[in-house]
Amino acid sequence: MTNIQREMDIPKFDETFLPILEVLKSGNVYKTRDLIDEVKSVFYFELTEEQLRQETKSGDLLIDNRIAWGKSYLKKGGYVFFPERGYVQITEKGKNHSSSLTVRDLENESSFFDFYKQVPTQSLISETPKSNVSSPQDLIDEGVKRIDDEVKSELLSKLKGINPYFFEKVVLRLLKKMGYGEFIETAKSGDGGIDGIINEDQLGLDKIYIQAKRFNDGKVRETDIRNFIGAMSGDTNKGVFVTTSDFDNKALEKARSAHHKIICINGEKLVELMHKFNVGIQIKTTYEIKQVDEDFFDEK
Image 1: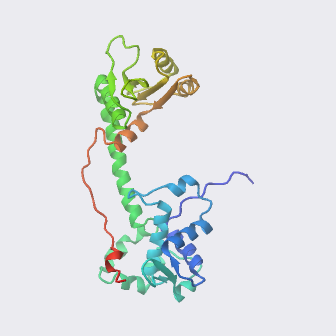
Image 2: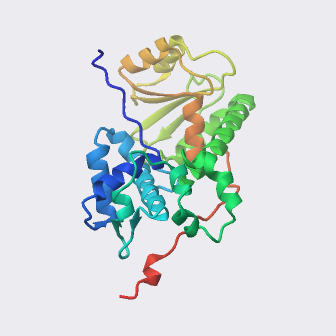
Image 3: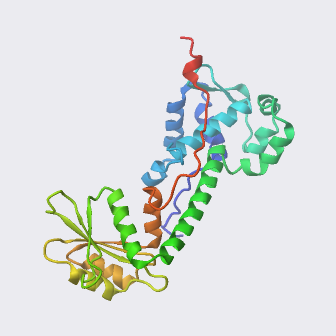
C-alpha cells in the first residue's frame, strides 16, 4: 500500500447534499455562514489551502459556492427550509433521507416540481443530464473558461505572426500595464540582446532589463539565457526573458542558478498575463447575474 495519498477533489455541488444534511441532522438552526464553515471543517478538511482559496468567475470561493448551491437544491427538494432570512434548518424529510441523494432524486420529488411549477416540465428534463455534475455557477464558469481559452489561443497565434520589433513593444506595454513603470526601448542594432529597460522608480535607480524573443518553433536554449545575462550591465541584477514558445530545461536551470534574478515567461504565461491585464484584447460583452435582494424584503 502506497504512502502517497491522492489529493481530495473539490466536491461538486450535488456531492454536498449528504454532508449538509449530516451537519443539520441535530435539528439545530444554523446561520448559512456557520453551516458552510461546519461542512468544510467536518467533511472537507483535507482540501489544500490552494483549493480552499479557489474562486468562481464571479469572485466567490468555489467550495463555499458549491455548498450554498447544495443547500439551495435541498430546499427545493423539501429536505431543508429557511426559518428566517440567513438561517437554515433540516426538515423531517431531511432527517429520513436515503443513503444516497442525487440531483435526479431531488428533481423527481414533487416539492422540487412545485418549486418550479411556473417552468415547463420539459425545460427541467432537458437540463437534468448536466445538473448532476455542475451547478448553474459551474456552467457559467465552464462557458466563460471555454471562451477565454479560445481567446488566449488566438492571441498566441497573433503574437507568433507579428513583426518581431512590434512583439517587443507588446511585451513592454504589458509590463507597463502591470505597474512596472515607464520603459525605454533600446536601439535595434548593437543592443547586446536587450530589447527594453524598465525604470522601477522615477530616477532610474532600479532597472529591469527585458529580452523578448518571438519564436514560432523551437525553445529558448541555455545559450540564449547566458547571452542575456552577459548583456546585462552592472547597474541591474533583474531581468525578464519573454518568448512566444517555451524554455528548455537547461535554459530554466541557467536562469535559476544565475546571480541575477531572471524571470522566464513562456507563451502560455504571456497570454495569461495579456488576458488578465487586457493587453491586445477588448471586452466584447458583459452579462449581469442577478439574485434576490434579501434586505429589500426584510421588514424588521
